[in-house]
Length: 453
Image 1 (cartoon, rainbow, N blue to C red):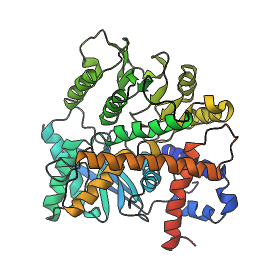
Image 2: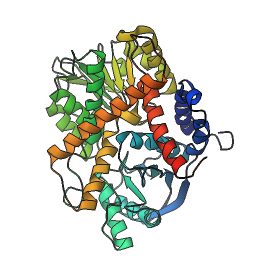
Image 3: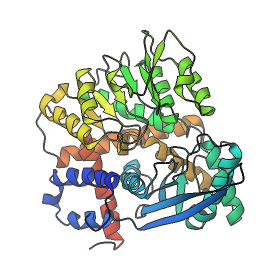
Image 4: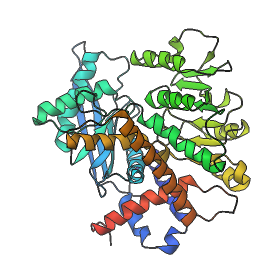
């Protein structure tokens, strides 16, 4: 790590992985894997490029574009594109190393990568976004393809942007292929893809609840705190509500809405949020309601009172150490990341400490690399459908998604039992188990392919 400039986000992701491996018996049982960590923690390739486009005012605008092609041992690079002014190489490397392990946990043949640009779609016209996407793809297009690197959406890259990017790729390469996922349903997209990350998150937490309660509990009757108001948060809220939960919050970068009534935030309220976000408007624009209140400039964690489940679904590092302590005080027993790297290192340490000391009464933490794998899982299923030139039914895709999320949970759980010592009544460490399981799969593939020896 000392050979690279300071990259705090990447160092955070690397240290989480290294700490999980160091604090397990993996290196004791198989010391050769230390060499694998040195290899896997360095990207295979980093592509950085200039993106110039013309604003509606006729002025040239210049941005930085990136693609981190981190590891392809398990399959072609796979991971999202993020358009946001905070995008930098450190953030993308952090997200990409997480993506390697996440994709490994799905059981699908996908490597890991991440990309994007320091471009903010907010406040831009459709024409400006189209011109930017076309300029971005002029550079990125020469480095991706259906068997090479298959980007998808992320923050700032929704169906509209994917459409512009795919159209630019198709025209540039004179080929129709599944070089991007998250496409529209009539031109190669998969059913359930918009819902996949949120649905998958809830399916994962359902397994957490059932395991911790010996099958006696479910989402029914649980109060659920959700941050964010994009696809992940919206569909997590809808699925949790369908399973009998009460949703007590949503949020965006400007503030949070917190339920004030017994019914919480209902599907009708989520529909209003969806329409608002389609117009790229903030939650503060919601009409006043007796069912919730808007609190400006805050995250929801310390403003909802008692709760049972927390689902950070907005962005990285959105739960701090102090907020983690507040969630435990509020009675939260399950927290799982719908966002990538949603909890700070300090927050994870707080949750893991309660897991060790409170046994069955602990707050159990599910890491994003497992809990939010539903999105990339259905992207993988979209790739399979594109290869077959077929479209599967919603029921078939949803059924496969449920199987993959159960596999992600079981894989992390069983690996933790194998490599992480714990007391008899202690819940296994899902963060350690998921890190180790994903790492071992990638390490074995890179060993077999001669990347280390």
